[in-house]
Amino acid sequence: MDRYAVFGNPVGHSKSPLIHSWFAKQTAQALSYEAILAPVDAFADCWFSFVAAGGRGGNVTVPFKEQAYQLAELLSERALQAGAVNTLYIDKAGVLCGDNTDGLGLVADLTRLGARLQNASILILGAGGACRGVIGPLLAAGVTHIHIANRTAAKAEAIAGLFNHRVTASGYDRVPVEKWSLVINATSSGLDQQRPPLAEQHLKHCTLAYDMLYGKEPTAFLSWCKQQGVPQCADGLGMLVSQAAESFAIWRDVKPDVAPVLQQLTAMVKA
Ligand code: ATR
Image (cartoon, rainbow, N blue to C red; front, side, top):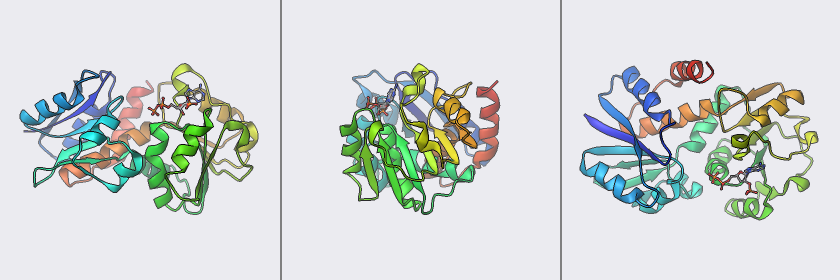
């Protein structure tokens, strides 16, 4: 049976084995998918042992996405833009390929939620890997202007500098006054039950607030957005399932249906 796995540290919390086993069942693909705890200093060894034991492909999560980027022999355009790899596989010629499906997953989830991306102005909060990974696919979906706000303005400016004039950046105190229809939290602030220090005036035209994190309860950012009257608030569970579906399609040439898997996972996570 073809073997796949997610590599992370920690990795015990990962929902990927469950999601991919549901995808496999749904598409009648015979495969196994496990979680592999890689030592922080031995990701490459761990990957190569997996391949030697019949591994065909993998997902890569914190803290190995940049190491996977270095390891891959052939990078997709998306992975190059993201500077990180979340999907590894060996192609027919035996070449180790690296791709990044995080941004596609976000775009797919925003589309599922009914967000209009064409000609939109989007505010992204945070300038870590989570932010960088999604800019290219958002631009490709027709977004006109993306502004990145970050506590450390220089990090946001460095990411904006990788793209064209449609991407701008600042600290939270210098966010331009514009009709931001979509505000995306790509910071890790939710892990500490905190929210980014965004002034409420920037939510005035926001029709959808999105947090890339997810959990049983709404994140501090989403609770605040709801309080401020944002009509629709969503967490990153849909992005998680959608990026997994994109990886599965790269490996297996068949695109699973996200909706039933997201429904099952939501029931589990929010229970
Ligand atoms: P990753 O690359 O995995 O996304 P990271 O580089 O640690 O992780 O980035 C985390 C992001 O969350 C950063 O943009 C960080 O802001 P700084 O660059 O200024 O540190 C942001 N972040 C974390 N906690 C935050 C908080 N409480 N409020 C606002 N931003 C926060």
